[in-house]
Image (tube, rainbow over the protein chains, first blue to last red):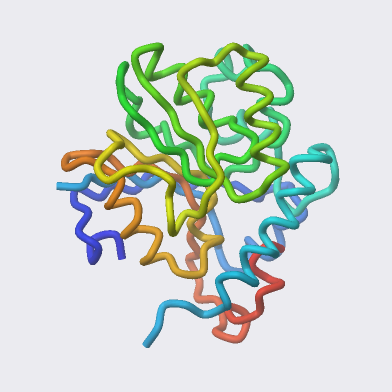
Length: 43
Length: 200
C-alpha cells in the first residue's frame, strides 16, 4: 500500500519480538505478529 | 473492495479508551509491554532513555523503533503521529536539536495533557503537541522533513487515508519512518471485522 500511494525506496527492518512475555503473546504467536521498522521516502 | 473493515469512529473510541488507561495508569496490566523495559526491548539508545523523566517514558507503548533505520538530522521538522505521552517526540526533539521542530499529534486528551505537561517540565522548546487524527493532521502541506509513528497506523481503520495524509504533510524528498506490527499468518476476516480484537 505504501508503494501504491507513491512512496519509494521502501526498506523494512528486522522483526522485533514486541509481545514476547506480555499478555498478548499467545495471539501474537498464533498469527506470527512481530514489530517492524519501515523506512520510505516521498519522491 | 474497500480496505476499511470496521467503523473508523467506533475503532477510534476503542483506542481512546485503551490509551486513556495507559496514560493514567501506566503500570496497569496490558496485553503489551510499556515504559523503559519496552524501550530496552526495542533497541532504543538507553543513555537517552535513562535521561528522560519517568512521565516521559512510563506510558510508552510502541511496537518497534522508528529511529533504527534513519537518525533524524539536526534542524529537521518532524511530525509524530499518535504521539501518546510524548516518548518518541522527545527522542526526536533530542535528535533534531534546538534548530529543529517536532509536532506530536494525538487524539486522546489524557495523553495530550501528559505530553504537554512533560514538555513544559523538561523545558523542551522545540516540541509541541496538537490534538488531531492521523487521517486529518493539523499540519500544513509539505511542512515535514520526516514523519514518524509507532504502533499507530495498525490501529487506524482506513490506512490508505492515513498514508495519503502523511504524503500531504511531507515535503518532496521527505521521509516516512515508522514502526508497526505485521502478521506472518493470515488473520481470519471475521476476526478483522471484530472491533474488540483490534486493541486486545
